[in-house]
Image (cartoon, rainbow, N blue to C red):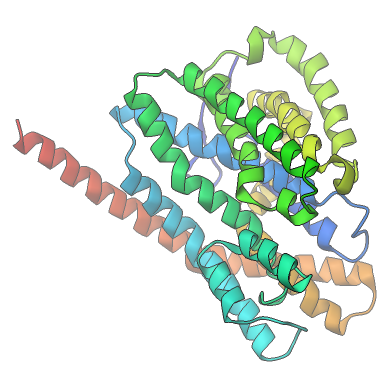
Length: 379
């Protein structure tokens, strides 16, 4: 049976195993950027997982709101995103700028690169810089290029809720909207094929919002078509036993094969296959939070790393770079950097994310009271 929403160990609404998936994704990214393994490790797959997870979670929250109130509030949505994302992101950008200004790490940063990061168009700035200077990192603060993925998500957040509102206003049900999103994913794959056929370079294919939206759309489609957290039926009506013992294991094998495919070869199509694999894998770990994988993903330590994953992602390259300046043994650099970045992320959570979460809830409650009072006054 589908697993319904539960309270997380931190007390807010959560879906079983998602914090653990966040932890796995950020660790994949961290190891990929570390010095011990580095290049051969498919670190980009961590970002792919983050995109799918973000689309799934955001759409689940929008769907819950619509089911409860009959509407989606853009004001509340953007308030949540603003207070959740921007403060940690701006702090991390500030730290990178400070490190560059002090000369602690090599840098070519300039005002345009800093502005690009602050206003969430890092990905297109990197494409432009690569075309003009032959280096996508030119002009950016040191060790901050991973903000390209944040730009992709922010661009998605700008348009997707409004699209949902329009489609719901047109009286389309969740399934119809979900299949429209699946169609959009197919179009995105076609667009990548067109660009690849036109000799588009790696950065144009890998970091542009128009070529990476399909990850978020795929997660959103699952949230509307086969959402175990909201009691939906399993994908394509498959039995739980079929997903658990046949589909999910096959999906895991195919996922690993696609993850290990060289980016220069598999970039155009591998992500699409990975997103398809993530559907039964997400279903399985959400529905079976007490299974073997669920026990790992829902372990308190793993879940806490998932809670801190956003700040870990924002700060990990900067910490790796700084520690690498003073320590020469690669495994020591990676282990020490991980300990430091988890500590910094915990400080960010305690000092920034959690207090702003309380502010967000207070503001949302105030907006809800005003809306309720306004409706009563019109009666």
